[in-house]
Figure (tube, one colour):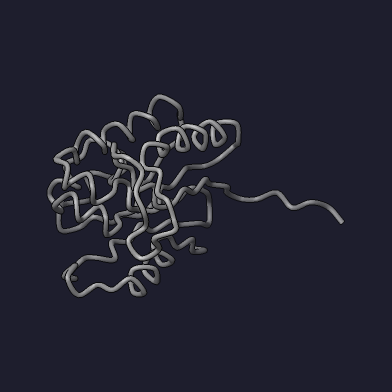
Length: 176
């Protein structure tokens, strides 16, 4: 039996939830320690590993920074610090999905205006603050669609179960 060659390969990281903040605990799991300041190191390790692979692109599945960043008044700094880790350690094309923690920190306008991250610069012209989604074709016969599961929704009504269901709906690889 011969090995199949993949048509596309991509790297995925989920829920970095970075904040330049002391360790804390998960709000609903008091035994689970959250090591906020370890995120840049772990992200660098992932970016380094991705660099060694022949990937078409890389994805960060939302919740780029934690809600603590806003409470501490360091939203933009924390976001920029995390983006800098990627840009210094990766030559790959990156796409960020928008998660609930991202909306805790930024308005739709601010997310759209970020020069790097949420909206891949190659697709910025196709987007707007009310349209934080786009699509592209990483290989012949495939289409990636970045969805905005929060469009038209009020965060106050969004429950955790619904959010996690949306996370799985972020990226669809469809044969065209």
